[in-house]
Amino acid sequence: MKMNLKRNLLSATGILCLVFTMPVFAHAMLEGTSPADKAVLKVSPKTIDFKFGHPTKLTNVKLISASQEKYLPVNVSAPNSTTFSVPLPDLIPGSYKVNWGSLSGDGHAVTGNFTFTISGH
Image (cartoon, rainbow, N blue to C red):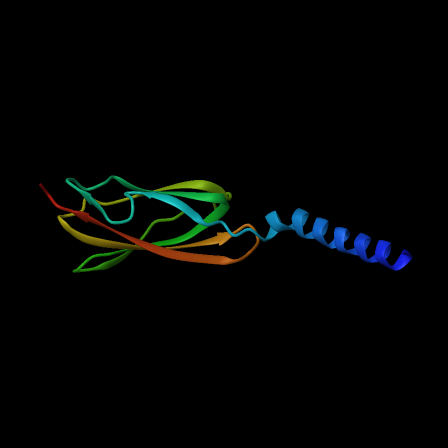
């Protein structure tokens, strides 16, 4: 009987530890962007906006088109946030890929990409 009680107490303690430490290990996953992935736009957007699920630090944003690759200005000294807005130059019609990187509050690097097209019509 004492052995079962001890085992149950250890199991409960282990589960509680997992539940209370899970948010610490949560990576700041991207929840959305504007323009959205695979969006087709009539005109060039003024900014690229990012929304993350947890506070993070946006570390880099690279815009890739058929004719060039360009790192966009990112304020890496800004405090962690869940939203970021990165200014864009005027873009000509065409397809664009955005590669981005961030550093989660737990210290893990997270990267991703999305695409959008400017149709010009």
